[in-house]
Image 1 (cartoon, rainbow, N blue to C red):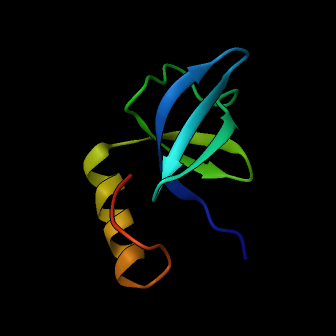
Image 2 (cartoon, rainbow, N blue to C red):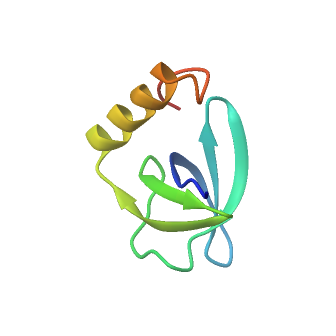
Amino acid sequence: MCLAIPVQVTEMLDGDMARVTLDGVQKIISLALVEDVRVGDYVILHVGYALNKLDPDEAEETLRLLAEAGQIAGAGA
């Protein structure tokens, strides 16, 4: 089973790439599939690609539920 998770964009990079964070872990991902992403936005991440933008409230709720289930260490970026 594959899991797509909300991450927050912390830095825009060249070539449709961005740095994102989740629980203090940073990763460089591709934004090639999503338009109009800015620093501070949440995106759904799956195997290195942002699949779509996510409402900040929905992202925070999803992260809270994942933390509650023990799937991530804390809620939020």
